[in-house]
Image (cartoon, rainbow, N blue to C red; front, side, top):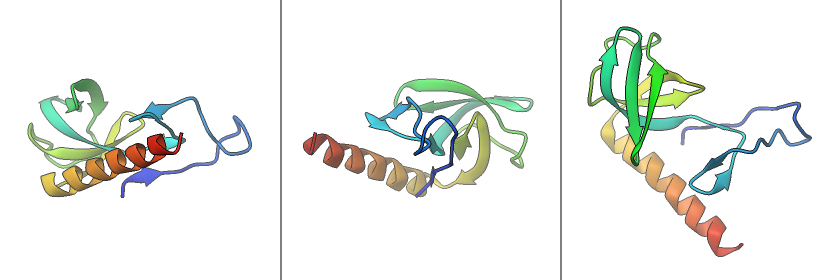
Length: 101
């Protein structure tokens, strides 16, 4: 699973006011699909959300590639099946958390 937890000085648990699928998170590396590439930048998409990111850490990023995005940077390529599994896991976790609230 592509989740990154980090310590933060903002409070005792490092929680920030961030939401992803309705869940408060500290930091998260998210699978996203590349829509277009221009130099060291790319436009990526996830569930209708589009974001410009930096792809300089990847070799030959192409439209259609799935990448792990963290803090505005693509840090790794992954295949479509792995991206789908990770996103399904995020949705399952959110559904379970929403049941108990």
